[in-house]
Image 1: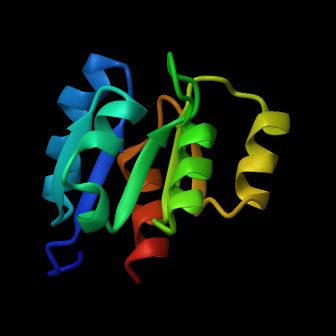
Image 2: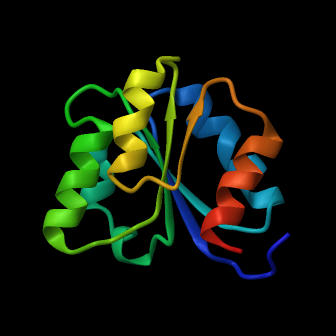
Length: 122
């Protein structure tokens, strides 16, 4: 487990994810902020402080991949762990090819999330 208090931000329109996932990530030793939409994240003061982004793929408004594109356009290169309820490898592969650290299918295990974060914070 890391001793660094890096900031992990979560962007997911599912309230249950925003309520439960931060507790687990804090147990892993990180600071956490959760956002209900890509727009909310982009308007926040936390974008420049975020060291890893856990990002839902399908959300109303701006999708996860669209947020990734916007961050790249702005010059914000944040490692991204995508999470999705759509268990389709055809959707997962483009995300990985575009540079995502990982793409986890919901529901994912604590171990799978820890392994993904270990890729960002070795």
